[in-house]
Length: 276
Image 1 (cartoon, rainbow, N blue to C red):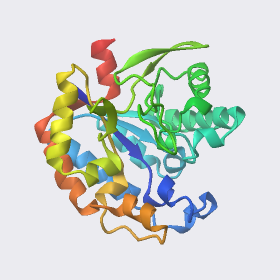
Image 2: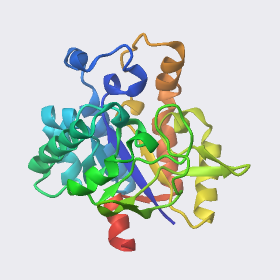
Image 3: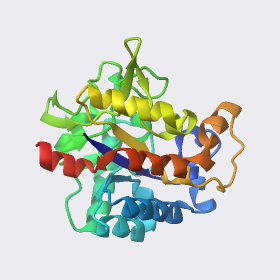
Image 4: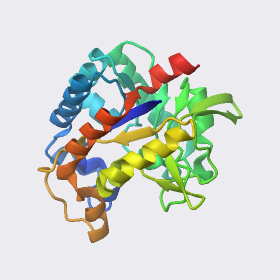
């Protein structure tokens, strides 16, 4: 089974868990570490001869275009993660359209090819922001990977399907690649990346990937460059947000290499090419 590997390219000071103490206007005051951490991921993927889809934040691409060029030149797919990591349900439709249009242009100017994929910050396409899918289609995107089929406080759409599918919207059809969940006692449980990957023991992740694959479904996995950086500066957020952000950072690289050694992964672009 070919699974899908995705990287959300953003720096440690841009994440939602720290947004309560770090304002967007202050981002320029923080030490930038996304370049070396993305390089670390690119080197690992090269060692395992695997490709991924990199959802790049427009703010990062605009200032550090060499990162995007390295990703593209290594044969990986470059896709959009929006410009300023703003939750979609906190934006107006006009603000969202401007955000994705701006980021798409920045990325396409760098890679000299069409950018067709999008992922919302913090998977923030919900019932209240499902209108975003129509705008994505209207702005030339071919697929989205923002739906998380679970109930959660910020983001999540529990009724979303658990497999890649064409979602019917006003503008027509848009391919959707929802984040993977595993069924436990008939409930969807998140496991496929980020804090879940760092928190759970690797044996659980290995079991969950195999369970999803047994259903005939590819696992859609995600990770961030800052998760490979246990030496990053500590930010004085709330206890719970600090726990979510910093738990087991020192174990990410080892677990990630085990994952790539145990399972086959490709980019979303490659998956679409093979599966239509």
